[in-house]
Image (cartoon, rainbow, N blue to C red; front, side, top):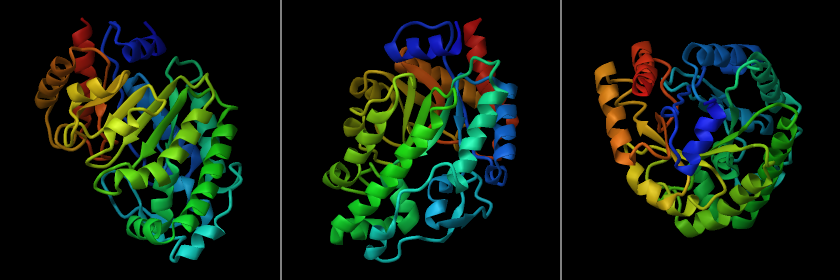
Length: 330
């Protein structure tokens, strides 16, 4: 069974030859240069042979060309710290203009995709690109607190900015069509009850998310939704047109079994990127994998973590995940 067959059978709840599994991480420093990010991503895949590759640029790749500036200050997950925001007053939302995806940091990411898909062209591994939702990008350019204030005080201006961000994202996705990618990993941060009310997300998030996800070409068969915050609006987001949902199932509701009652395709998780992968041991990881399989009855589960693993994750723990899955096959 090849990787696409394994994944598509998992979407449908059918039996597979083994549990599908994928881990991914950020590459601080390397993510500032196309060739270095591509090489790190390819080497990680060739070492572990995951069932899909999630291409993980610095999150700022989506907004740098608006004028956003950041730097890596040692965060263990590889995420970067903002240095300069783009929006500091509500009027600034109206100054955002759709960007050319072939230039600047967006163009660099397209070059990264070209190098990765070329480097894996003799492999059957699906490649997906991380895409940040318009509302998540808006939180980057303004900061989350200011974004929420402007949503509540200057909603029309915020929507003007969201339209520019959405158009830029659509242009980038259109430019991606030249490469043999299989889909996207759609990072949606603000669909959380800890961030917005459901009504606020329905107005300022959901229409833009639907526009992007419904625009994707049919040949992109692997669309993974990532809900990155605590208290996700899982029930609402489970209606979006994706095949897989990934979230921090080890730290927040719903758990894997509950999620399968709300979502008809595959759930992605079972491991904590901190508790199990960073601080755990190969033994505790194997035990947790068995627990995740029991909770889901080994159906519609893609084994992973609820977030990118840390750059300092012990290699023995990464190997333990793969060894456990392959051991279940025998």
